[in-house]
Length: 75
Ligand SMILES: [Cu+2]
Image 1 (tube, rainbow, N blue to C red):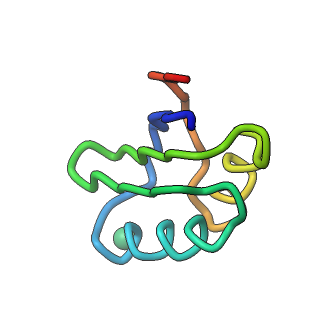
Image 2: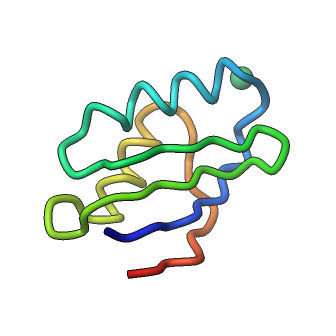
């Protein structure tokens, strides 16, 4: 599993957190999604054999939450 922290400046409230969680959680390869509203960060635990980070970023973008940067990738 890979854990990556994404900076998502558009996150502003619990509604955003719910929308992001609901968009990502059903995707195959996603193990866990955590949204930090105050920090405007999304922490995603995923299987990079099943899902590319670019795909996760694309899904967030489609929801209206473009990713500014990604960091903290741990295998
Ligand atoms: Cu919101």
